[in-house]
Image 1 (tube, helix red, strand yellow):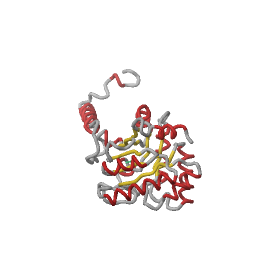
Image 2 (cartoon, protein in one colour):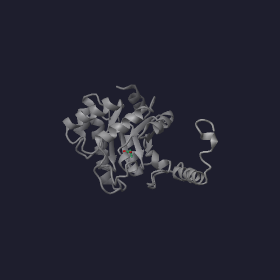
Image 3 (spheres, protein in one colour):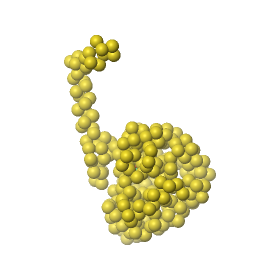
Image 4 (cartoon, protein in one colour):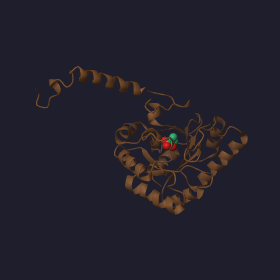
Length: 260
Ligand code: KIV
């Protein structure tokens, strides 16, 4: 097993796993210093491409962005989302996962659960491709953004789903928008680490979409803590630049290439 993956699994019940998303090299380079996991999420679709959902992002888009991210990564575990429809059969999943792994040199792929595709995870893991699972709110399969696991029957279902993913060989699992009670129960039940997004402090680690936590995406559900308002900072810089250009303050001689 990949050393980085072993390290992530060992963190369970010891120290929290820190994860964020990246879609390009410069951000990845910053995250790499602090994060255990950098995910090239298919949230790329909404965040960077401005699509309504994640469905339109292609395998090619994911590979190009992941290859850029890889250029900024030295130490963290890099996971790449398999986009919708890229794993609809086990042969298609294997072909596409191999393509992602070879063209981006990432460490693992992530697959969203539709409660039926455990055999896909098994197929990839048997072929030595590490897989991260994803349950709860799974944007590739669920339309309505809402809390998951809010009844005991739904909690039971989520636990069952998580166990099936672990049995299929996944090395970790994202829990998205799952109630604290359910995520606590799932985390306790599994041997592999759980990474929560909007799923409480009981998970073994946390992930957020970087553009959300730095205040750039414009999408701030309740579970997002905004650590920075980058939109405001960029606006300030652009405003200043606009004024400078209009008032002929920029470029002054300091910025002339021949010094005059
Ligand atoms: O696509 C993504 O960024 C994700 C995270 C929200 C976990 O799947």
